[in-house]
Image (cartoon, rainbow, N blue to C red; front, side, top):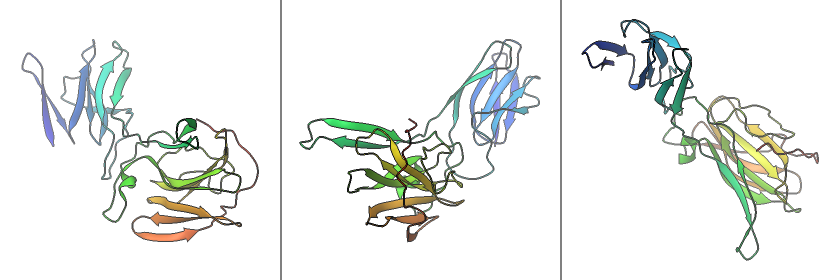
Length: 238
């Protein structure tokens, strides 16, 4: 795709490679452009040539929904920029109500920062795969600790005594145990591979936590994977 940018004197700058979502010019005459899916660029010759620069949304060769740079503001002629980025963030949360439903005992978010990677969903996947952090199942153990399971695209989802410490790519399933008073994570782990994964439900017995998991489409399987949490405690990171 080729787009043309015009100034008030009728001069034309040509931008190719995608849809231009934001433009700006600094006091030195440097022209900046953000191109959807292709990053950000600067021109020092009135748009006749362009050089790629750092971008809050990295260029992507893949398909799928990406955050978009909606605005650019240069800081004088320093080359520093402020950018406004579209936010697709969604957050999981856990809320405990009083027995009569009249008050909130505790409430907390459960999430990480938004992933800048493209989000590509498939017809066989549930709608939650189009989001960033979600809970699909909840259960209580005998001590009233709260067990939740779902999925996240974040690279910094809170973990505690994990079976898998890091997101392996795209969306990963997670299982998290929140203490009965909501003050700390007793356990929290990623569980997934390089494609989209999510826990779809959770339950437990006297030996382990069980969950159903969707992996890159309709395949669903129960797992125990090392999800037999120890009794160590960790401070939540929210």
